Length: 277
Image (cartoon, rainbow, N blue to C red; front, side, top):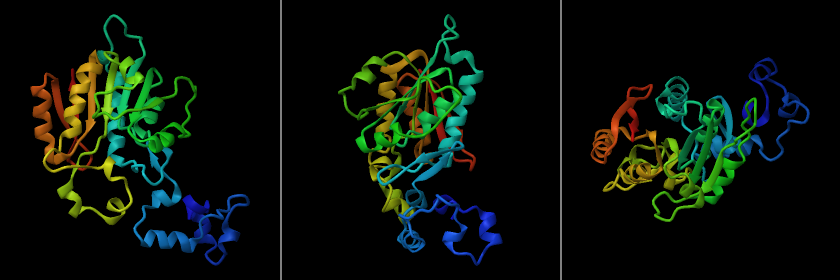
């Protein structure tokens, strides 16, 4: 009622017998979505975020729709950690250039929620994001996020990170990325039986699932890309599947990364990994 019809909760309580039209603020009527239609879509399992057309993330509204992964609250934790470390830890900057702009690359950007949130939280950063889907990139580019200054907005470009053919933007970032962040597909196919209909039948499977025989597919590729893209002081921040956390840590250590740490989310699950080049 609030998000779709712009009727605040207090009005629903204080005027329970009023019609929908009477409760709505003039000019806020949503002619495209009848209450009956919304209820029917919810009953079929469609995520309420797709019906409303947005999800909240890091205090902002991000537009989402069919084919776009809905931002999750645990990903907010990853963003908050990056912002805190980048603001208060100088080790991300070269000692001889402490005032240089940080370069941040968000792989598999989806709605752009990570990239835009880092843009808002790190004014002294140049943000890039890439995805394989043209439709998804349209959402990422057209988010309505603001900050005091509107300079250096995120740059989004198309890139299949599993491909050895690099977009021009990725080529230009070689050796320059200070923060490489990603929330790639990481749910094993065998985990589908534990998941709800609203995820399985409506959200994009390509943004969620990997095969059981290669659950670290994207992380192994990210570790390769990191060796090409990261600056000498660069770090990788990843959202991960707790089931494969130890295996992932071992892979990054074996491929030359140092200070590989696994971090818990608010529920106590090993949900994030951080590694230095």
